[in-house]
Length: 335
Ligand code: P6P
Image 1: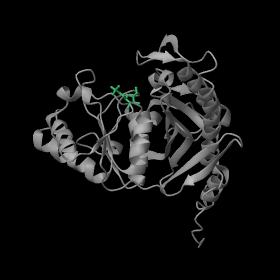
Image 2: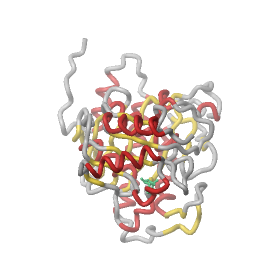
Image 3: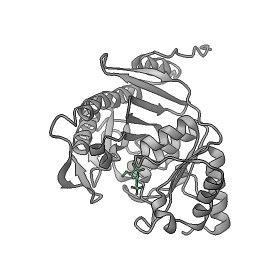
Image 4: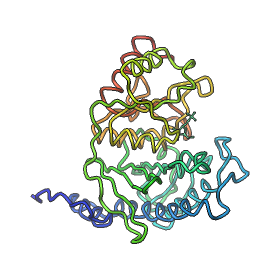
């Protein structure tokens, strides 16, 4: 039995992926290659973001994406780069992207995997120099090899994910991901063009004192959420809301805390997307010992019915998420 030689901080992502693949005797390397393809695209997008202030790709692209949101040029760049890297890598049969209405066929009929991705979440933050992020989920296709990816391949529950992760383009650029055996964080060193293991075996504290929610919508929140927020205030918790999901999630993962996106008047089903935002972060947070719920259900158990469907999201330290769930049930969660 291979002794569990914990890989030291400073191990490169490539070596880490290779070592972890060795732990799976029947692994044939496609998922490893897919993770490398994502890391490559992340390096390219990171460079584009870091130059955004200097070149003309900042600012709105003048077009709207399927969400009817102003498309920032970096959104478009990130979408193109990730799709190209996944298409060229050959492991992915089809892609779902926040930036595209339908299923993106890569032409890789023998690709075993499906990827759901938010190429650049929180893009409205680009022009004000706030951290932004990429979020991705990886599924094994259910349809036959040699065919195009289909809707059933794409509408799988979060529990079916084989891997999930995010890249946060912040004061430093980090890749954080799980393949179902814990969560590991890698920090990018641009002068070397490498991701290095910097945060092995990330776990989220069972409870925290940070809550992240847009309190501007307080009056439209379900009563149970209003009650929870009032408890946070009474307990002198810290309100930290960057308005960039990946940044808020990452800070809470590191320090303990809860991120809440309830239903609001503007978003009666919640704002965040199940397939390429909530499921990925839910997989990660559970692997780190935390919890992710829509107020009634485990996020990973929600049966998808539509590619861009929205859901409520309560995610972070287990004790905090459970308290919100209890209050929502007690006060009647609006359906
Ligand atoms: P609000 C950004 O648009 C985003 O999708 C997440 O990154 C962020 O957490 C949330 O929406 C912010 O939404 O309604 O509070 O501005």
